Image (tube, rainbow, N blue to C red; front, side):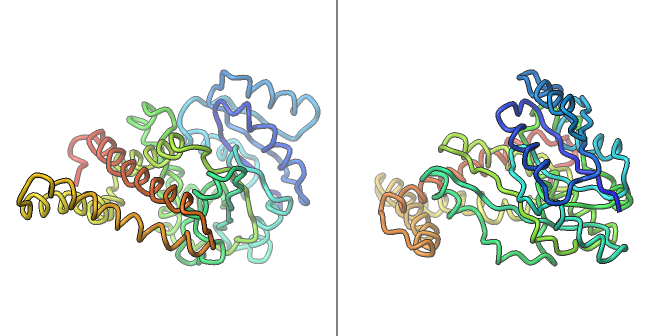
Length: 326
């Protein structure tokens, strides 16, 4: 069985070498590597070409557009039926390729495989945000979990039946690849096409969390923009129920109960503070942290996350084409 490994990227000069090195160090090598570059201008293409000149089995495509456009172009160009997908910015465990493709060898009828990913924090801030935001590996159930395209494999047949990666190019391109969510929609389309994800959770890629508050906020902000712009409206109900209604409801109740002006400040801040404390205490205790500074940081990260979801989702929602809003 021959397998192609594909990825897409843009302006990843600082990360592309680590990614390619981890691919070339695999215990089982892919038969070909296809990289779709979205017309980088920071030297990424030159780095890739240097690997090609040294004999690495890489084909580089220059495909301007978002992640979905790049992935679809790379899959289409791949010579083999079985496709493994990972993301630049990640480091592959040396057995990742072997493990992500093993289910196809065990069962020729396999259409898709869900791999795993783990955070690889390097700073204290990154470790705290990882404890707060990343689920434990052993809590993932391959029957219900929707994998990220940083660690996934599928056949071209399944990819075509699923309608390929959703591009939504009429509005997503304007956001210059900042929105997430296309891999989740692809996962759902794979299932709708009649495929179940085989267990490939032994196939692990490692990725580094965002290093500071600003980049943390922007990461989840753009994820939320992508959810808001999603034409299917998959995230609408959860967003309205969990975030907007909670804060709008709090404002309405506070205004109704307020006797003097300062209650308008005390009630919201008290409610918000207690809620953040309750949500932060779980991971803080679970990781057996003892510093109060870490608890405060977790609360601040949760607040940043909530704000990113509210502002990002509404921005994306009102960018959604007319007639496609809930």
